[in-house]
Amino acid sequence: MNGHAVNGGLSNGQQHDAAGQHNNNGVHAVCKFGKPMLAEFCFREKLVNCNHGAWGAVPRRIMKEQQRLNEQREQDPESFYRYVIDDIFDDTIRTVATFVGAKPENLLLLESATVAMNTVLKSITPKLSPGDKFLTDSHNFPAVRETLQYICNEESGLETITLEPPFPIESEDQIIKLFTDALDADKSIKVVVIDHITSCSGIKFPLERLIPECHKRGRLIIIDGAHAPGQLHLNLESLGADYYIGNLHKWLFTPRGTALLFTQPKHQSTLQPLVISYYQRSPKLRDRFTLMVTRDYNPIMCARFAIKFLNDIGGLDAVIEHNSTLLNWAADMLAEAWGTRVFPLPPTMRAPMMRLVQLPPSDKLKLDTYEDVRQFNKKIFDTATLHVFIASLHGCLWVRISSQVYNSKEDYYYVRDVIRQMLLE
Image (cartoon, rainbow, N blue to C red; front, side, top):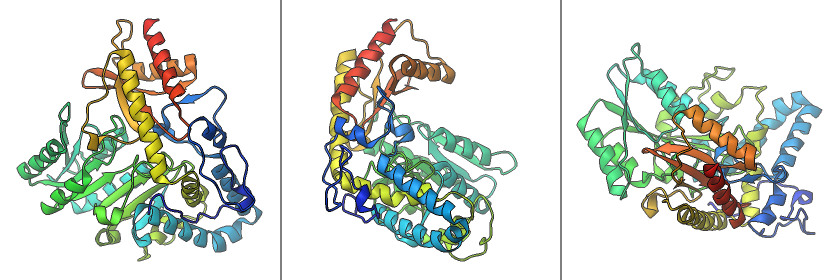
């Protein structure tokens, strides 16, 4: 599925190589990764982006397809919404479903992973009773943490248990035992919420082992896979989670405002949208969620073009190989240059395209609050036109780096020198 050609419908005239040219047949040759790929994107001059995982980046040709859809809609809005959008949307769902190994009828395309997570949590909450609990861990995404806190209040009587993974993590077995011990010790835990890849730390949790353990104990499991599509091969049907959520803009080159929600058939009748509209009573899951009329669906419908772009530049296997090889080198280089360490993880639990490297100690750097960290990230950008992300974990400061097809070794040498200079100032 992933890494194989999927027809996304780019017109021949919009098939470009990394230098911005197309061949006579409209068939895209494999692009060279690294600096040549920068021509595919719209980055400002001198920007060095080593934090792709935060917001993603939309290639020029995908932006052109989005603009083409915008113009098609505005040429005749009524016809577009009444007669055209359904077929395009269904084609997009089929394309994304093939890419992530899902049946189209089990897949929704929504605005973001946060919207999808709120949708799931607020749909299952009415089925829970006071005293029931959610189980999660301390590396979950802040928006998920806030949603759980909102749901678990005195009025609902629901609670959240937050596990603290060991540091360092030495094996997958530690994580499996951490969760299964908690489930076995507290039968009031009804729902497990866990990341596929953690945003703050780049941990890839062993879901193929954890999901069956949850189901064996009769618990629902919701996967926050915000960072997974485009970074990992996925087969959501075989993975078996009750709900799986993923962003398409972070690593799959789709315009922002695009996410997927996979739902097992047995849960679909109770899954309700956050906003009630015309087709609320429809038995068809897609209708309840995707016929909100004037919502802008064009970013979502560009997902098929993004998958086409991924295949055009070599496919997911080639992208993973380039990005993970570059990232492993960069993380080791930075740790050696700074005299620190890479965030310790077993090889099977390392995200392919995100890694933490500990910052060197500095008496001048005091990052005690979130605002301190935000201001230091901004100072890095203002000083050097560089994007990385500084995180505080386990009493240490770390820089999170990402790798994408447009990155090259020079970018990480720049990270090395900029951070070292700023810590000396």
